[in-house]
Length: 223
Image (cartoon, rainbow, N blue to C red):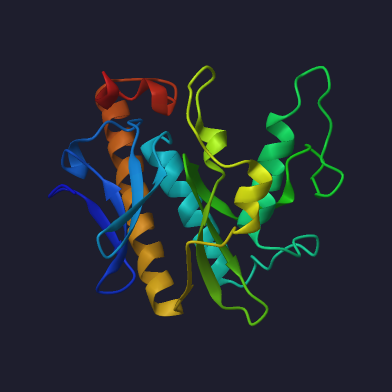
């Protein structure tokens, strides 16, 4: 952890951390960030690839919908999200472009995207993070494991259990009920980050004298 990290605290020992090596105010608009969840000293790396604005905005939007009770699980999601996510990945990774077809045991939207991805905050390497409303309307934050074979680079020799054997002992890693008070604090934090990015972006754009609105890739802070 770094002194400039932004912390979304869940309890005295549990927290989401946006890992920043520089003060937030000096970061490029479109830099990439790492987001981790800490359970005591145990770290779950959830995101390594999203840009700052993208990673926080998705978190913010799902959080707001959860506060409104709009993230009830789709009726097709009758098993744990992480379990179904592994089934989705296994099917996708075992087909090529010529044989690609949808998993008949899962439900997809009109764009052929698995419906479960509507609840995914981030996914990286071994872990995926989710947020949704349970049957009682409570806000659930969940971290689930991904089969380690999905993370092995082509040609890399790593000993690991067969997928079916690994799935026999599948279990979520973290499942927490997020109070409305904590969720609202997180939403306020996320909004503050996004507002600052927007304000700084617009200020730099005006200083640069651009007649047309820039996109984030063009932000002068990235140069």
